[in-house]
Image (cartoon, rainbow, N blue to C red; front, side, top):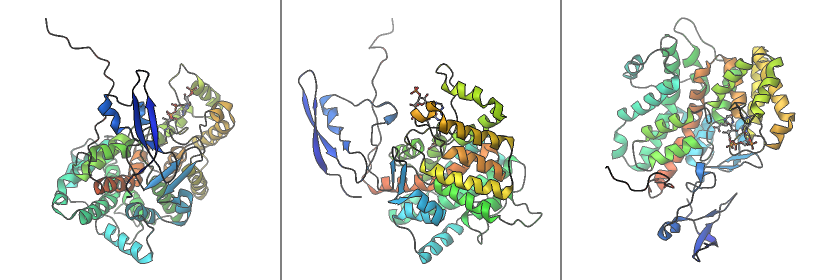
Length: 426
Ligand code: CMC
C-alpha cells in the first residue's frame, strides 16, 4: 500500500488561543482526511459517535461513493463484476488485487475445493446445540472453532499463512453453513462436491439428500452466485471494522472472522434481510401497506421499513439494482407470485414515489431483494444472514490480510467521560 503523504494542512483554532496544525491526507477517490493523531498531545480527542466522519484505516480494496451510488472493488464497478464474473473471480480480485486469468481461476477453485471438507469432529460440535438454535449463533461458534483446528498459522511464513487462511475460510464457511441448516431440520449432512461450482456446491449441501440425485438449477445457481458476489465486500462497515478491531490485537484469524459474524447478525446490518421478510409477513396484504408506511413516518413509533435506507448510500444502492434484476429472473423461473411478493413490489413502488422516502433518500437496499430471492429459493429466514456472512467472508479476510501487511497498531478509541468525578466509600 502506498505510504500516506499529507498534501494540505489544516489549522485548528481553539477559543482559548491554541492553534494546532494538522496534516490532510489525500484519497485516490473521494474525501480527503484530516490526520488528528497529534491532538492527543494537546490533551484533546475527536468525538465522532458511530465513527461517521472517521477513517479507521487506509485501504486499497473497495471504494464507495454513497452520494453517487458507486461501489468499486479494486477499481471495477460492482455491476460489471456481478454480470460478467463469478464470485470466485471477485474473491480472487479482492484478495490478490487483480482479476484471475483462466488458469489462475482454475487453480484457485481447485485449491478451494481441496479445503471444502471440515474436520469430522465438527459433527460433534453441532450435536452440542439445540436444533432450534439461531444459525448465526451456531456460525459464530463454528467459525471460532476453526481457530482450534488451525494453530499452525502462527508458525508459517506470513504470505503462505495468509493465503491458506483465506482459502480455508472461503472453502469451509459454506460447508459449515449448510451443516447448520441440515442440523436444524434433523437431516444428514451432505459432503461437498468438487465438480460443482462454488454456488452450486452450496445449494447441493443445503438441499440434496442421500436418497435421490440433486440437479442444480442454473438460474438459482447464478442467483446464489450473485448474492455472494454482491455481498463480497463493502468497505469499512460495522462487521469489517469489528474484524479489523479484533485483528488489531493479533489473535487467530478465524476468531477475528467470528467477530465479524457476530456484528453482522444485528438487524441494522446483515440481519436486515431476515427482518425485512418478517416485516413483509407482518404486513401480509397490500391493503395494509398504508398503515405501515404511516408508522415508518411517525417519529414516536420506533418502526422502520426494513430493507430501506443505508448509512452510506444516499442514492440507489448499486447492488440493489443487480439484485432487483436477479430477483425478477428467479421469480419468473420459479413461477412465484405470492402475497408476500405482491406486498414487496407495492412497498417498493410506494417508497420510491413517496416524498418522505425521496427527501431522505431512502431507497430499497440490497437486503430488500436478497430476502425475497432467498425465500423463493426455499432458504429459511433464519439462514438469510448466514448467507450474507458467506459472501462477506472474503471481504473480511481481504481486510484482515491488508491489516496484517502493515505494522500493527491496536485499535484503542477513547471516550468522553460523563460519569461521577472521583468519590470515596464513606
Ligand atoms: N424507514 C423509515 N424511516 C427511515 C428509515 C427506514 N428504514 N431509515 C432511515 N429513516 C429516516 C430516519 O427516521 C431519519 O428521519 P429524520 O431525518 O426525519 O429524523 C432519516 O431517515 C435518516 O435516518 P438515519 O437513522 O440518520 O439514517 P442512518 O444512515 O443512520 O441509518 C440505517 C441507516 C440502514 C441503519 C437505516 O436506514 C435503517 O434502520 N434501515 C432499516 C434497516 C436496514 O434495512 N438495514 C440494512 C442496511 S443495508 C445492509 C448492510 O450494508 O449492512
